Amino acid sequence: MAHQKKGDFQLSLGFIISVVFAIVLLSVAIVWLRGAVEDITGLTTGLSQEARQALTNTFRTEKTTFNVYPTRPEVKPGARVVVGVGVNNIASDGLSHLYAINIIPSAVSENICANGLTCTASGGKTLTSFMKGWTTFSTAAQRVTINNNFIYEVSFTIPPETVKGTYIFDVVSCYDKVTGATPSSSQCTTVSENQWGGSAQQILMEVTS
Image (cartoon, rainbow, N blue to C red; front, side):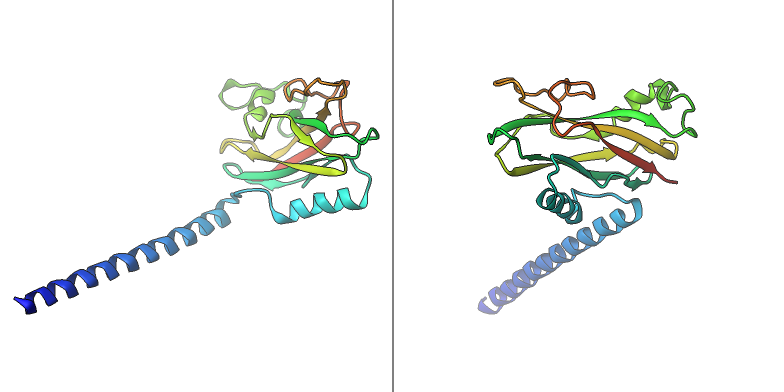
């Protein structure tokens, strides 16, 4: 009887070790597969350290209030790319301020549409509507203390049917220029009175084959 119990215990221990080993192998396989998929499709999971460092260095060495990096990313149809949009609070009043950004389709290369954004994209959408659907970013106003900056992550997911070429977006930043008026992302445009950082920055999205 005791011999049987010993055998049962050894069997159970062996089973547990096998399960643990299988879980470890599965975890390694998932990590490897995720890396392989990202290499093949160009998918990214977040803003790169290079982009963060580039924006941080710019704000540290120059009196720049608003910047974008990278300004000319390359991406394949069906893939995703993340761009950093940074606001730097060096306001002359020395106070904290609320900031919001907006990403606005503004133009495309001639091979996509010879008349700007007037052409129809896939699915019958206007090019403006089609391009707006690519972007994901925080529309909430962000408070930034004086002499500090905040970097937004703007994700562009390119539909598989996208025609290769250059898609241009205006990037606008607005702030609470009027005391107590929280800036709205949807109302932050290239003609807004409360723009922060001067004229709009641009992202030239190069969709490659």
